[in-house]
Length: 115
Image 1 (tube, rainbow, N blue to C red):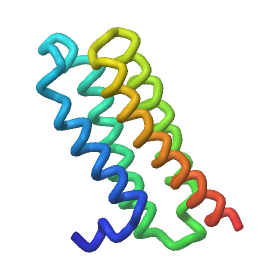
Image 2 (cartoon, rainbow, N blue to C red; image 1 turned 90 degrees about the vertical axis):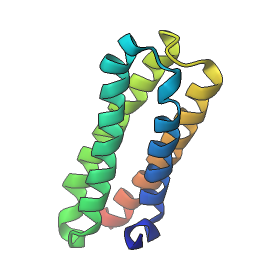
Image 3 (cartoon, helix red, strand yellow; image 1 turned 180 degrees about the horizontal axis):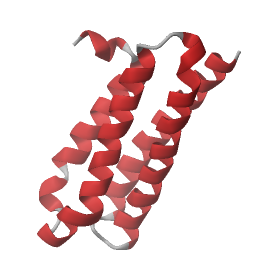
């Protein structure tokens, strides 16, 4: 997949695969609430990054800021999965580490677009 040559997109792709792999551990009640919202945010982030990557540099920043906002919402939702014990601490930390890495990559991209 040619689009996955973008490191941040590849990392988001890996986040989704990891998140999806944990789906079976989530109760049915939790799956249709917080889990589904978090999954949708991951997909929104992937979509936003792919969209921004296709734009000229001058138009990227607003879309990257929107992706950043969704990533921050995802951080809150992942913290809730830990605090409500939807996932155990080890799995939550794994997801949070990936999200933090995506955040750093996104921050660097935004900084380069502003220059």
